[in-house]
Image: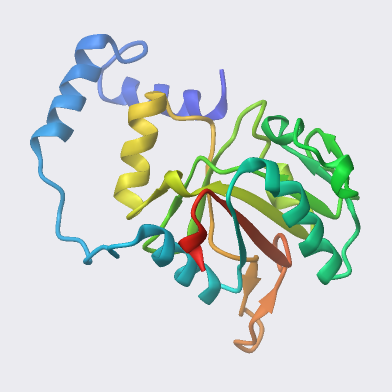
Length: 220
């Protein structure tokens, strides 16, 4: 039993409910959500890709747009060269089969360790309203790859950009049903202003976040 399972079990016990939620309870919860219209939201950008890119840049994220997945390794190599960063990285398994070696990058498919300087991941989706990446934890999507290295490179498909946070959660419920152990939201490089309100990047995670946006040249 995970810590989350234990906490939820104690809550259910305090409510006089035993065991995990059954199909009837889940159906009732889904019906409740479906019968309530969402609350007021800010107007959405007519072009989610452009809106996401603009918000991400404001958060000190850098963005490069490519036409297809085959172009990703050379785009990443170009970014690493321009910033004098090492051409070695760890990546999620879903990206390992790309032609990294041909682009001059040595890539390993494994969770990041403390000594890894560059981590390459995908994203479950991206949120146009805030320029945020949404990632899910799991065996093939280890969170350490985006959290431990000084440089995080995220490969985002334009078709996975949604308008707002509500849409991201709906997409997760529709595609996965059961939540993963962790859902992470990444809005630019790690930062803090705890000391004399001076902004410092890389305080609790990557100094840099670079996005390779796949499938829409209008992302600039």
